[in-house]
Image 1: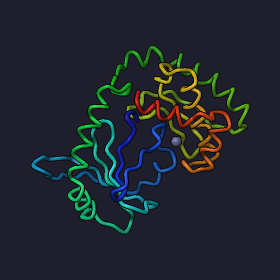
Image 2: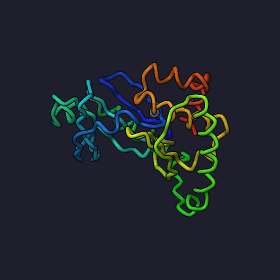
Image 3: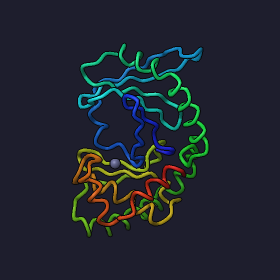
Image 4: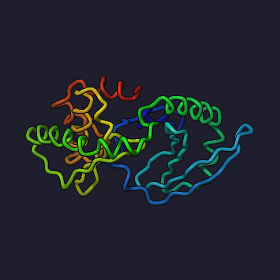
Length: 216
Ligand SMILES: [Zn+2]
């Protein structure tokens, strides 16, 4: 996700990994769209209930979408209350993230370019995968090249990997990082310390790369 996410966890701001959201994605159990008026502005937001969510959080993505994640025991009214209590943060972040989003590599959606470069991207990715699979020794169940709007890659729970064709535009080492990130999800389907330790085995400077990817 370019620009990453801006996330508000009960008033503590956390910057998230932007490469993918594997590990949390499939656990979503309920999603609804709602509208709210804050400081005379109407905003639309999505509420999702998440079985494993422990705390309430608001996430603003680079296209300005607002998402509230609720632990199972909370209700949509808690989501509304949380937005109202943090209305300034929400409005500021929607504005800021849209600005980042417009400059972002993900804001270009050129289908012709994607179709033209898809096969080339597949070769590029497969070569890198081969190299890193040799190192890690994990197994995948298929690789796809996509034109995702918000992510560099993903790993599904059944071992399928997908990559954004735009990895072609990245510096070599950054592309390596994206590949390694998804490979490591085959072993650690989360973003835990154990996961990052695996990444660091081949990309020890991953923190710097993650930071740079956020600014692209
Ligand atoms: Zn990830």
